[in-house]
Amino acid sequence: MANKVKVKDKNGNIITVYEDSIPALIAEGTLPAGTVAPTGTTPTPTPTSTIPTNLNTTPLGLSGVNALFTQYYGRNATQEELDYWKNKSDAELRPKLIPNSEVELARNKPITTSTPGTVTPPPTREGEGTTDADTLKQIKELEDYINSRTDLTETERQFLISTFVRDEKGNYITDKFTSGRTIPTNAEIAQWISDAAKNAETDISPYYTRISGEELADYKRAMANIRAKSETFLKSQESTYKQKLAETKQSLAARGLAFSGVAIRNIGQQAAVRAPTGYEGRLQEARRLGYEEELQGLGQQAVGISTAAERRLGSAAVTGALGEVGSLAGPADLTGLTTTLYTPGGQYTGVGSMASTIAQERAEALALERQRRLERYSLTF
Image (tube, rainbow, N blue to C red):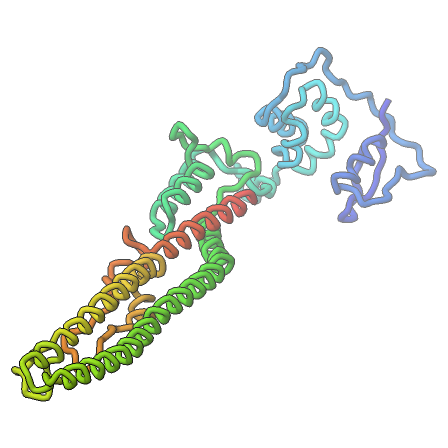
């Protein structure tokens, strides 16, 4: 036979409970820690609670747990209670609820207001008191909001929709937000998106900034080497040309041909007699050909380097850094020997189908990191 005793609850109110239920009431917070049955008084005997026999032993599920809590406690189960009891049976839960039923029903009993015929229900816990129609309305509004966000990638959009709005068959997942689970608000979704983008940028961008700087420095060094080769060749050829010119003049003079047409044919404007305007002798032609071949080869190297740089780093980076390379030229007395090293095409940008490869890699890395962070934030719901 269970005994009823009077004790003070956590608010100081005197309530009547079953003596053997005191530990459970302390655990759930109804009674303060250290509460014991009063001594020196005679407990009021009460009839032993009648617990039905032959109770069902199959798992109750969420609705079954809520039904029993409503019957014996006058409220829905909390999320923790649902998680614990949903896979247990009627035979396990009902005997635990019946001994405390009178106390819980009294505590959760609706309060009658001063207006006849109306009842003010007890305060609801988070997630309670929402009908399926309300839930569906909120989910649809959330779907509209997610679809309105133009800053989401399609992958991010589909993730949020599949997590909070629709299942794999396209049905609204109203059952996911019952029994205490809440639907994230537009403000919460917006904060997730903002935080994911900001934190991904903080984590990812410094790496690609460093890589871009290092590769740009490599390309600049390569172009500087081409300019250095051109200058070295120019000095070498000028020295060789002057030596050959002196030797040719000496040979012509020794043969008495310094003032002849032979001299004009061999050294052009450098002959002792006036040559036709613009006429180049064989020595000058060979000199020009050597410059043309060298400058053409260096120009092709520059185009290869700069094209790779523009594709990798983007047109803006090449225009600002490698575009200053300009052109290579031969000696001032040889006209028409200017070679433009590279002219950026301007088609490689940070976005779009012609994005530079580093910009593309960075965008993909940012998208993956944003997605990872959105998934982590969603675990809080």
